[in-house]
Image 1 (cartoon, rainbow, N blue to C red):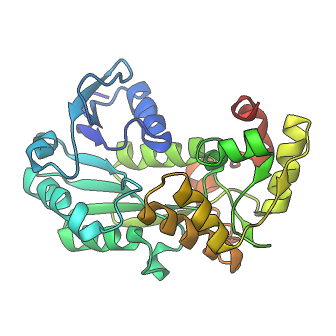
Image 2 (cartoon, one colour; image 1 turned 45 degrees about the vertical axis):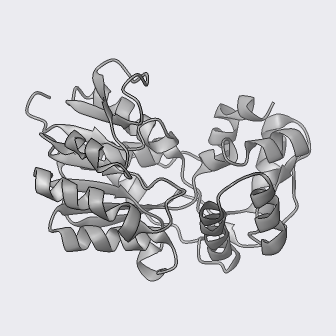
Length: 282
């Protein structure tokens, strides 16, 4: 793909960023991996470049880049203060398109920082793509892994609400497609093909692991205290609470056809995900 513009991937070592990076490399795109240290190991075919949203001295990473995958670091709750300067630097450097990892329903939820980032991009004049995924299946094998692995519990305050989970592999495939094909000024609400309650999630995990996994459904206060005691930043915990409150209110159950339509195949099911990831909880 010698004619593909140079692409910079932020969050390149995270769940989504690393998956997008691998797909771009496989497609032969000229791709830069934005990382805290240039010594960070990245896939062969990609080049590591030092970048930090809070260090303007690293904004030279945008030079010669035409397309950017933008991932908001979870601990950065003040989007205009923490990400605004980097977005302005993208524009000044000549970046043409930004594919931003947002959140399902962000356009109707001014509380989450994702919406503020979307607004910054709308104001920037650059072409944009908003990936608005539902809750990641992989959050259960990363962020919530220890609760499931060590306590056999899905510890989230989502009540009886259903969630149209999406597998990160599907999300990354859509993101890579948007970057490679240069999609412009469009928002994609991305979900799986089914909406599950967390009781059903616990049941599917029980089947995959051949042991009983429960769903304790803690109160918002209990969840907040537990995660703060684990040393997580207040902003990060509050964003998680906002997401789970959305699910509890029944606002995360919507199923869209964008994932299936864009990829030309069914979305990965939660049952398949649980089988593929089962080693994370053993």
